[in-house]
Length: 199
Length: 202
Image (cartoon, rainbow over all chains, first blue to last red; front, top):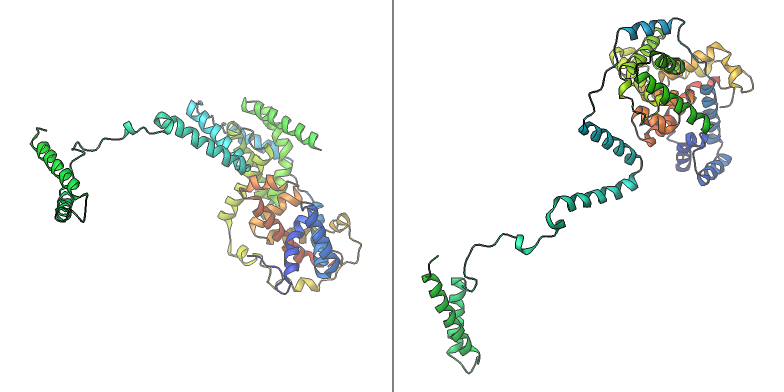
């Protein structure tokens, strides 16, 4: 939004952005070295730095203003007509809320530990809320609808029958065809018995 | 320095505790300790000295009314300046005039070209000597008032009130990077306006 001189080269633009921090002595040693090296070589930036420094000193020496003589009297007259707002009695929920707000403020200032704590809290909540510590036993799963597990899907069984019949027609080509035919016959018998059984 | 600051902070907390227990004398002591700082800040945030004093009083009235909600998470200084800053923002919103918008600062404006023609006093740079000149003080205040409010807030809190970056960030409610950026832009704008008065250093 606010721009330095558009004619400055890139290094000047970068160095100028550091001038304010340089004056406040908040740069790293390396940054200070880079800025001072540039200022030694660039007259324009050096002049800007001097002007900014002079401006800061002027601000620091600016005259201070104070309140009028009757400020305190007028203030206390106003305070006499108001009452401090009393907080509601601290319920446990309020105490928890205030404690949480304080924790959030502290962690906001320190994001790295906040992430670690966040993961730890998430894991703790999962352990507390999920049954069996989060592990799901197969017995907890809902059972599928009751049906004979050996009962084949009708279409698949018919397809199997055709394949077996085809293979059985040429037993020399498929030695296992006889066994398959026998197996399919047993399954058909089982399916018939199941359908006939009461539910 | 650190010990003195810590001792002052503990003293503030003790005063707040007593004020929260309805000790009016303790709150009076708080006002005496902070009224000058708060007023000096507000005085350069609003155009009228009368309004500045009224807003300073309002700052302490609000602090008095909400003293029980102060929980020492922030320092008393931060808390009071935050109340003052919010009051100044509300004041500006209510009293914004077209004229204020016309004098808003932009770096590309040529409005300062006439001022560059003014005679530059040929004195060795000494802030105290320069500020004995009332006109220079007036020019400084004029330059500050020409800054957009967000930039002015930061430069007043840092360069005049001497508050550190992190405390200003807590007062204004912005990230540290934003505070640094605003301070840089404020100083850049001020030095441009004040160049004719900086003793030939430009």
